[in-house]
Image (tube, rainbow, N blue to C red; front, side, top):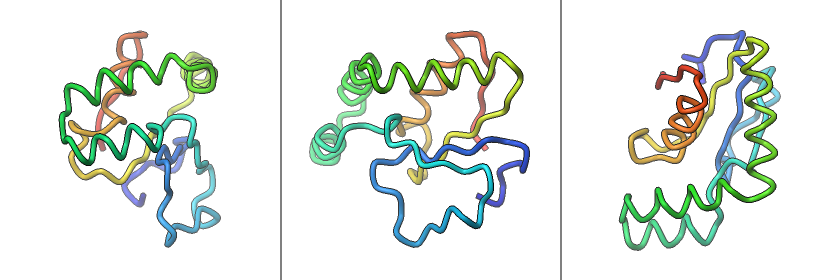
Length: 115
């Protein structure tokens, strides 16, 4: 988290945040489970390791009311110039839901990049 610029609003988007993480040490950091895959989806993906299947299933979950409401809030923040960082602990971002979310925001006209 030290690589993330201080001015960014930081959203930890994991279903199970690490037990060692003390977010009180990181002002402007929030745990947002609504942007993480469901436990069922995550466990199935860990078993089948089928990235294409996972992407499609996660995109379906993105259509749910809770996730859509959260995505709308982030879009509103981006529209007024806020910088947002989506944090997950998967090393390969190309096989992580944060890349799917990043693509979603890119399709909405916002720039995104992996730090």
